[in-house]
Image (spheres, rainbow, N blue to C red):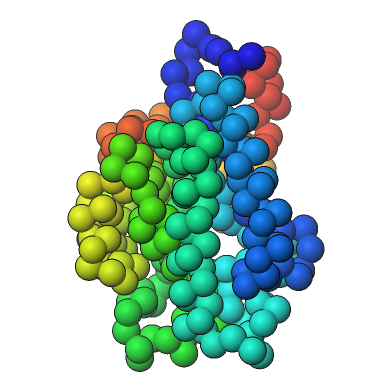
Length: 267
C-alpha cells in the first residue's frame, strides 16, 4: 500500500550508509552483493510506497570504522589510495544503477555532497593534495559521488542537502553555501570533465533547518539557540532560517529534530 498524505507531496525513504561492523570491504564482491541487494530492496520499497526516491545519509555513526576514510579500510595495506578511489567510483555507479533498475526515475536526496567539504578545500584531481586526502576520514565519499554522477540518468536529480546549514546564523550564509556548492565545491570534487555538465544540470541545492539547535531544545553550546535570551528570539531565529533556506534552495528544505514533539507541540 502506498504511503499517502494530504500535505507532504514528495516523501523520501531514508537510507543510512554507516555499517555496524568494522570489516566492510569495498573490494569484496560478496560484501557488495549483500549491500546491493539491500539497495534494491530499498528501491522496491520506495516504489511500492509511492516515495519520490531515496534520502541518502552518508554520515558516519560508527566511531570505530569510517566507511569513507582510507586509513580505516581493511585492505589499506594491499590497495593504494588511488585503487580505492577507482573502486569507490565504481561502487557509486553500481549504487545508482541498482536503484534505477528497481525504480526508474527515483530521485536521490543526499544530506550532503560537495557541501561536506571542509577547510582547507582540496582538489581531488591535484596530486599535491593526495597525501592529505588519504588521511581524511571522509575523502572517499567524493569518489563515490563521481560514480553516482557517472551513472545518473538524465531524468534523475541528485540533491545536495547541505547539512551544515544546521549552524547558519546569517542570511548571507545560505547564499554563500549555495555559491560554494555551485562553484568552489563543484570545482574541487569534479574529477572527470564529462561530469561537469551532469553536475551543473542535475545536482540540485537543498538546505537544512535544525530545530533543536535553533530553539535550544538540546541545550548545546555549539548552536545559536543556546545563546539567545528568550524563546521569542529563538522562534524568530527559526523563522529566519526557514525563510532563507527556502529562498536559496532549488526545491527541497529538510527539517531535523530529535527533541521536538510533533504530535502535541510540547517537548
